[in-house]
Amino acid sequence: MEPAGEEDTISIPLVVDTGRDGFRLDRFLASRIARLSRTRVQQIVAAGRVRRADTGEVIWRPAQRLRAGETLIVERPAPREPPVVFDYTELHRDAELLVLNKPAGLPVHPSARYHRHTLTAVLRERLGAGHGWEMAHRLDRETSGVMVFGRSGGSATTLKRAFFARAIEKRYWALCHGCIEGHVRIDMSLGPAAGSAIRIKIGPRPAEEGGLRAVTEVRALAAGEFRGEPITLVEVRPETGRQHQIRVHLAEIGHPLLGDKLYGLDEARFLAIIDGGRPLAELEAQLGMTRHALHAASLELDHPRDGRRVRFVAPWPADLAAIMPASA
Image (cartoon, rainbow, N blue to C red; front, top):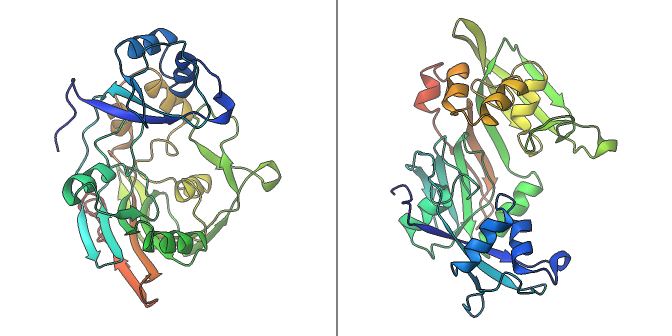
């Protein structure tokens, strides 16, 4: 798969919600795509890049009033996307279950920075647009390891329900700063990080302030060293599945993941580079890694076809093994 060229475009579907019923087209687009100025929106409309999804009719008037329930398609130039690792390993496939080993650095879904360079796009290219597989859960872009997929409208629903019911056992391996001994249980409710200027950052938040209960079991496997400082290889079993849960919990007990840009650095250092438009490589150089050291090592679940218990394992990746070999 090649990086998007300057003339490539992406199609963005936008549904008019009830809160925007009656909005002018230009106002609606500016409210839905926050990075666009009203002037840029009007240029996009004037170029014939906005159409109705049901009829294909191009909407030329920025002042066109919209109605709730309408779906628009906006064609935009595809951004230059950062390079990623496109190669994944298929661990298992049968009629109801597809299991992959996702490489670190490959996003699973499109985002502001990634559109074609995603796992969903790679699957579509390799298996065909109508492949019928639907992911049952997600991994962060920098996290490697086991991901499971089911059939759309069938086993995928069963798998998602099993994840929600905590009927699937997830085990991660991670490298963290400092020395951890024995077993640690972290029971800490999480929510949007209080006082943080980073919108996606998660932090401790009490239940009375909207925090969701999060529990993580940590077991030390081996001790080592990185850049002259002590580190620990740990096995992590999250009992709940909150956003960034493992990363936040380990950071909050003083043992952030190696390479974690968001939770392993002082926020001011992070923002100085990100907001300053400086290359991400500066953060990676400070941390000594291009990814955070978290790997989804195994998943154990009831097979959606017959209920038998099955387990899938993704090997400890070479980049992390170079820092510390696998040890149990």
